[in-house]
Length: 133
Image (cartoon, rainbow, N blue to C red; front, side):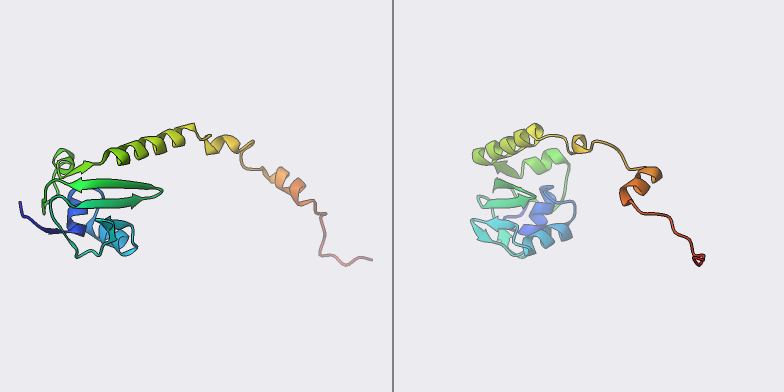
C-alpha cells in the first residue's frame, strides 16, 4: 500500500464507481469534494482526508482509512474508508423517505389505450379522398 493516490483511482478502488473514467467524469462535474474543496481527478488523497461524494440526491461523507491502488473485493474496499455518523443517518433518512413515497406505477389508472380508445380520444370524423358530388 502506498501513502498517496489519485482521487479517481481511490474512488474506483473503494467501489464508489464501476470504472475509473466514471469517477473522473463525476469529479469533473464537481460531484466530489476533498476536505470541503471541489477536487480534480489528479488530486492526491492521503489517509485522514474527508471525501464527499454526491450520488444522485444523496451525499456520502467518508474519511479515508487506507490507500490501495488496486480494486479488490467489496470487503477489502469497505476497509478503505469510514463513513461518518451524520452521513449514515442522512442515508438512512433518504432510504426511509423513498420507502414512504407512493409507487409511481400506482398512479396509472389504466394501461395503454387501445386503438378504439385512441379513436374516441381523437374525436375526429372519417373522411374520404373522393370528391364530393
